Length: 182
Length: 407
Image (cartoon, rainbow over all chains, first blue to last red; front, side, top):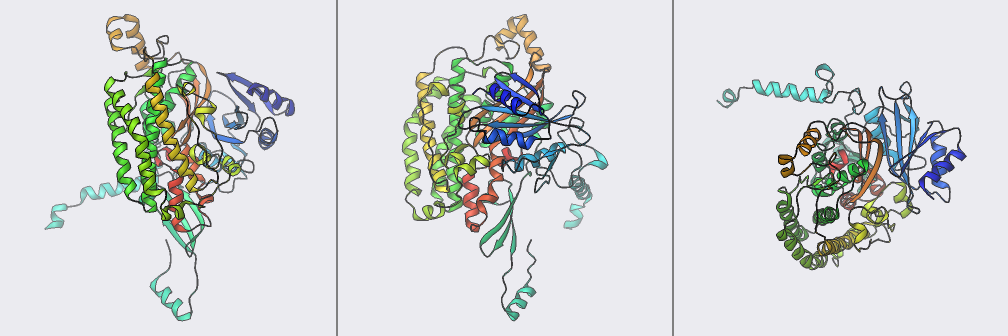
């Protein structure tokens, strides 16, 4: 089955949820609503002639000022048996950035979702351990959002650990090395 | 981390010994975590009850940086992902961008890229066997295997001037052609290398300590491995013959013969076997590529808006000068709008690039799907219930590089 046919079948099965099917360079992306993402993925995984058993990746895209709703959570699914790839994009609005966790279906989604939360601030409902993963726990802001500056927030809003390092550096600069020796 | 003091111990001895769960923080500066990985282990005696990995110590924000650089300028960032095998990352990145632009490299460039990515696989696997064996206690392999890695790095240096941060492939081809000396030396390497692999194997394959430390440790079944999203040798060790080079062939892989070795039990030993066989196959691929490589151009000639023109043309033709100026200052502004996912079989597993383009010279979003990140997430599953000593074996067997994990 070609990926585009899978997308058609998905649309047949879930006419309410599938909003758009796009094809670019032989890759098919399906834009879906976020409400029934678990059912969609379960269908794709368990249908005998689709069998999307490998969840390659979960990430998000921030369409600040370009599209409404603002976020898209992107799932890359692959079937090892049939060798087809499908991209699922769930729309997530800015006001309530949350979507169901897909960990009940793909356990490997764990860290991908945590990273997505870390970088975009999207909540994954039902995730057992939704903490920041790459950044420190007390980091402010979500760096991969388009309104986050490239060099981070400066001054008071800087990360506390970095401010500490700066203070130590300042203190060491004043340290009287020669005096200490003598 | 533990709160046990001498007074507690004295108290214990007086009132009779009690067992307590010990919390042990392993890393981030621990030699056998292969970088800055921190594991918090909760121990009951010597058995791991709970294992919590902490990553991110090497986070440099590569994805954010890529959004602010042109497609050409983002290439050196891919060196810094898996810094042991930077050539493979470069190839993965340029393939993804080429796929987005809809251009294709000429045949000679494809062969060269296949050669260098297999060389990267060899050097990555050599580092892996060296450090993995060293962690488990077989030190000699380390000294032998660095001899071969040195040879490969010297060849990289000959080819592009850098040993680690290569940045050699270009969008639409490769930077410079290979020389005769390079090919001769590499061919000699492929002649000698199978004997060297046997040398490593004689050191550890029959070693009873090695067998006891690796057989039956860190078992993961095929279904479970797929569900965790594992790829590369870790998945193949469980018996799933998934290899991007066969499933979605790129570059010169459709034109060469090679096999995909798989394991059976999915334990540390099987993954070791798979990687050793993979080295032999890589050697075969390199040999075939050298023999079959055609003559011809090394950059796509029909895509002036995406590939840098050669220096002579810039100096003599107005058109080329303009293209070069625009490419350097604004990036490939003729990039189409759209999104692609392109993956390669990096030595550690599937390295994927998901690029969203909005038609400017910079990627709107670039996502790196790195195998090490996924493989590090499976550590608790592998370690829990085993001994502390097996944690080391498990870290070695999933072969993670934290530069790629934290990005």
